[in-house]
Length: 361
Ligand code: HEM
Image 1: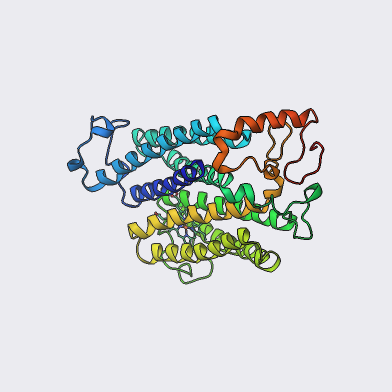
Image 2: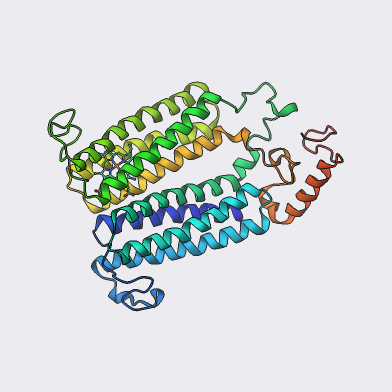
């Protein structure tokens, strides 16, 4: 249940980002002037019949955000109670902190009449929150827990199979994810400073490769285009490396293919946003698809680092080698795992997976 719920929370965060994109794209940010109330009504008591025009987008965004906030509270508490890995529990608390801060930033944005810095921070934190919920969903998934257990032999190395540790892939995947996030920050700056149409043509800029004249908005817009080119090169390098060196590893190949598809879609949506004079649906799809590009690259990065996630509990047990910690029986078996870990530390435990005695270092 927990993996399914974590996946639901991650998916609902994507829906929330789309709803937030609609608010900005339709210019509805100030359609509801108060916060946390809506025109003086308690948020959940606001009549549906009054949700018209910009109020619809702004109020719906608040309702979806509250729902996602509630789901994240449940997720954090759930992880806190049954998740044996401290780092996964911490991610739950971080997500909880991030969603609370996100709500406050959203409220301040409204009360202070959409200051650029707060709006940009709100957009940037939304992406971090999405990264957190996706990471939790990934770390609790069955695939993550089981994938490498079967590849590991003595000493944690594969028995004649590829080792999952590819330093080159790890480095370019991290760089790709970081640069995509920077590109999104530039996109958010462009959006909230009204620079979205500062360069009206595409792929050229005022008919040239480089804009013949400059001001701050043209510079921000052009930076986003240069960013798109760099992101394209990096995604090409990461996916190329996966196809060339790890074509048989489905857990890397699948996100690599998806990343390429999402990239093509993202550039197409960006082009239509400019050439179509910012149609609000396309514009909002560009925002949410940008978030999907980011988390797909993140998933690839985390999977490329899977062997480095030693899931220590109480300093003793590597969960990827512990057949008793499986998603289905996570909640019942967590206490047992802890006691196994304690015994492992004191040198008692026998390796259940590989059948040799000894203590893990
Ligand atoms: C390839 C990677 C790209 C990524 C990851 C990306 C991502 C984003 C994101 C996330 C935003 C919104 C940020 C926010 O408000 O939260 C944005 C805005 C924008 N992007 Fe991109 N983008 C990419 C490429 C492009 C391309 C090729 C174009 C075409 C010129 C483009 C045009 C725009 C425009 C015009 C906006 C602002 C829309 C507005 O003013 O409302 N993007 N981008």
